[in-house]
Length: 343
Image (cartoon, rainbow, N blue to C red):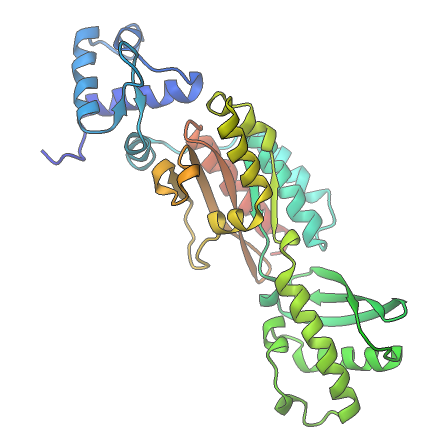
């Protein structure tokens, strides 16, 4: 027999062990299962099946005389072969949709902040959103407003409907009308093109621009490029640290430190949740499948979302003992609602 194939009886017992552990955080005994109405097997027969599953690495016994809990391999088999998708309850759908439709959808920061908060509240896990790469956004228009000497508010309007606002400082005093003219030139030349294309433009694309205006453009464009590419705080949104800390798996100082590190280390979250742009599926990483050794007591569920022509990723991270069918539905629905807001 293929070692990865389970009989119907083995599948049923593995599913029961996974589901019971998700609910109770306690090992499952053969005696407990024999008393459930779904099982017609004796405690001895169930114990024999458990022994086989343990031998093949699907379950383990945390200590002598205890019941069994799933291993990473057991969770993986459950997710890939046993788990049935469930529809998201209407109450959960309303909570997510209301959170996203009551904020200004042109403000990407507010929208994604609301999405991570809604995902966290709905799932009781850590909700994580990676913002789309703004440099891939298609330019509609640039505006620059002076707020004090050498300091300006730059507004970038994108075709997706988003407005990106940032503070720009110049080392030299530049007349307001010259800066406005430079913005108009850039808006005309790069309307319909990405910010990345604008930032990578060479002088050949400005042959019809006077040397004075070109000099200002050479000052303005690098400032835009630096801010757009370096603004990490507006790239990762994470909500729900307390949800994870309240799980019994994390009632010790070491694990608490890991949870805090996850939330505070933005680059780690970016690494964990980055997803290939051509990936359309829900991706699930369980325990040892996560390369960072100190995160191997966690699982991650993530997917891509699209807002206009921009793409980012979102998902949840929490203990391996998580309700996978419900969380998959919640992650999928959040991505769907975000996409509908800018369709």
